[in-house]
Image (cartoon, rainbow, N blue to C red; front, side, top):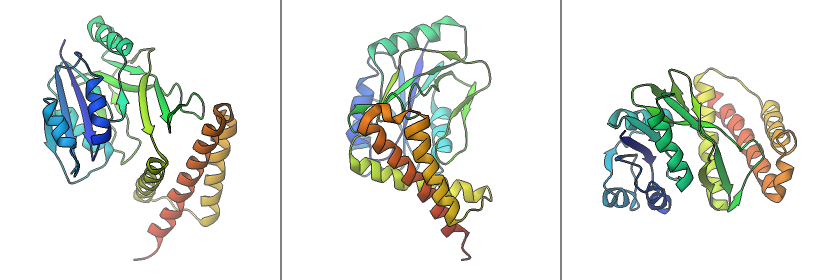
Amino acid sequence: MSLSVIIITLNEAANLADCLASLADIATEVVVVDSGSTDNTLDIAYTAGAKIIQNKTWPGFGPQKNIALDAATGDWILSLDADERLTEELRRQIRAATQSGQFDAFEMPRLSYFCGKPVRHCGWYPDYIVRLVKRGTARFSDKLVHESLVPSGPVGRLDTPLLHYSYRTREDVERKVRSYSDAGAKQLFARGKKTSQAQALIHGAWAFLRTYVFQAGFLDGMTGWHIAEMNMRSSYLKYAKLIELQKPA
């Protein structure tokens, strides 16, 4: 069985080489769809022998990943982000899954790291996500952010986690808070959602409480506190930005 790995990128030079190295001998094809990198992301992809597609007109995460999905030619497709890594055991499980014939799609747990610390609570783990599909059996949702791969049939499950180095530094945290709150506000606005300053504050407070208390973020110590604080700010900003979008031009 041939396996295509698809990755979308924008200035991922700090992450991409390690991501590609973690593929070892599992990938028969790597497809990189880039949205206008100005660092050496494309050089890294080219050196690794990836098929490179440039689409600088950013359509959102889901549509961009569908471009990569359509370009893949393998019997199976594995979708990765540049800040994710496969382990040797996960590669073994992927090989076995594609040869089993039991399912056309598989989900796997994802273990995320926050500023160097693994996070096992806060609603972050096990975080099962569909990432491995037989070609032609799934599409990405059209969401601008928090997109998902939607299969057409039953989904099998792997038990070895995909490693996710999503927030390496405080600068990463701030950048993603801005980016995700921008995209989230635009999604809500496109759906005709209305809000107010009071609702923005309530959403922010609930995000903190949900993460730190109900999703047991306190068990992750100060890391859990910082994630709860990040979720609070991101949620509040999403609705605060929606207020700005609601104002007459």
